Amino acid sequence: MNDTHSLAPPSAPLEVPTQVLKQKPKASRFRRESGTWLARLITFGGSLMLTAAASWQMTLILPLNQASIISSSVLNALLWLLLVLFTLTFGWISLSALSATAGLFSRRDRCRADSDADLQGKTVLLMPIYNEDAASASAALGAMGADLAKLGVQEHFEIFVLSDTDAPDIVATEQSAMRYLRDQLADTMPVWYRHRAENTERKAGNIRDFISQWGSRYDYMVVLDADSLITGETLATLVREMDADPATGLLQTLPRQYLGETLFARLQQFAGLAYGPVFARGLSAWQGDGGNYWGHNAIIRIQAFAESAGLPVLSGRRPFGGEIRSHDFVEAALIRRAGWSVRMLPDLPGSWEECPRTLMEAAVRDRRWAQGNVQHLAIMPARGLHWPNRVHMLMGVMNYLSSLLWLAMVTVGLALSTHFTLQYRQDIPWTFLPMFDFERMIGLFILTMTLLLLPKIFGLVAGLLSRQRRGETGRFKFLLSAFLELLFSVLHAPIFMLIHSQHLWEIFWGQDSGWSNQRQQNGQLSWRQLLATHAGHTLTGVAVLALLLWLSSTLLYWMLPTVIGLLLTIPLSALSGSAAAGSWLANRGILGTPEERTPPAIMAKRQGILADCQARLLEPESQTAAATPSA
Image (tube, rainbow, N blue to C red; front, top):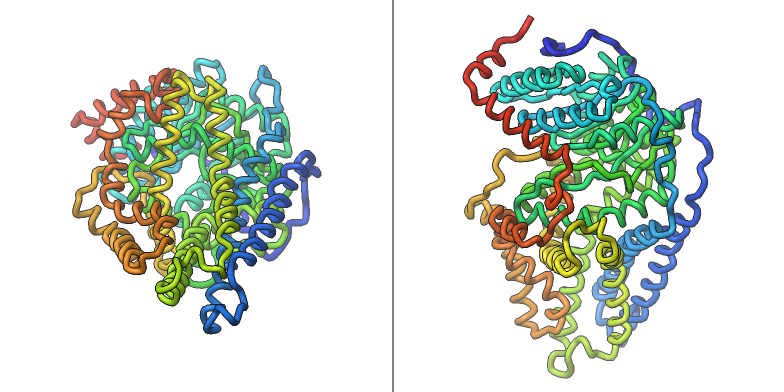
């Protein structure tokens, strides 16, 4: 293997056998879990009953199989298709709402270990990187190391950066930045760096290669992204939790977004602050010890990972076959399959990540995630998987498939509206035709919107009642921020509907997403780029508006938010990606987070290290030293 090992420790190999998905593991360490039945009853039983009731109401609204009204079998088929699409879409909405509701009744996922217990074993802060900002990554790691030293637990930790970077100039900068970090933490903890020349299996292969070469050196690994930041106290708590329960294989934190400068990033930051805990507590309540893994800001028992999470290569052609892309979901499922527990700690603070700065940057990320999640359909039949893990995979697919279902439902609705409006336009407006129960339709619409907004309502109420949740932000500004986030969510929703539908179409026809770094180096977008990317979205909005105006259909009033969002796609994308707009709101305390008003010490430390590291990297001798491998 053609690696650069000048900053790597002595070899300490650990075997990572490739798992056979069709073969269930023989041994199981898992204890029967308890305390999840109520959350599961609320989430799945409640959503099933609500969906059945809503679907029945829809059958009473639509004139199904009424020969006196429906003039052709094609129209009747469209009505039945509309019913099916509505049922699937409503089921997804109700599942999300009732999952959030279940979190209100569960307190099971608190920390279990003694907060004063001494740490055991050795933990590695593991950061795989690929063409990332080396100075920023070094600053975050340096701040985490310094924070652990403040607690006096630094001897239990080491730092290891795993580079898959394929750009020679960035490799040189990485090596220089790692040497800087090593010097900064020379009296604190070891800092290791390894660069792979061959990026086999991407991030999953990077971590597997690390365990194969150095896995027996450590007991636990905290997997980080290049933009991750975790306080020393939180890291120590994660280790204590693993020490206290030898059956725990993985603990996932709930990262909050930070460092958002653009409007789009600040909207995500606020949404994560206000609504993230609502969704996470609900998810944690019903998943129990069969939890999920998001690929970063989590601690993993290396023995559990090594013996159970070696990923196979799927048979078939890409993008469905080949290397497993969204490996984190699968690794969690395989760890649980082998008998280890996989849990989330949604109330554990001190874990952060950065977020996409623009709508287009989010779309690029979603394209990669969509392909990986669709690929999970081939993994779901694997033998021995715990059913919550199968549900996680299905939910991952539904995150994108729901957009396609919504688009199909809109298309069918427009086709039916066109037919009935043209057929009856000389007599009576379509929405008041006797074959449709208009009052029942309004009631069903109100129920759907209530369920859609219910998690946001929970988060809004919690923020208004809890100063800890909203920080120094007053109730009025918190309420104003929630309204602004809701407004942009409504306007962005139809744009992502088309983007995700396009992603699924490309995946269906075998187009590969490629492998991009987590964040683009330059978030600024020209109007030419915006026009090239969003012209189709805008033209779709123009076409729908023109059709509804030509038909004089009152369906326009129902579809107005969708039409407006599509018509304004280009200026919305430009505004959302604007750092000036984000700064203007930040100066007025809107879409703010507690970390902005009172930055934690680790963030201030990170900023100081970042400035110093960037200055060092600009020195000519640093680049020269980086280009010369040490012995």
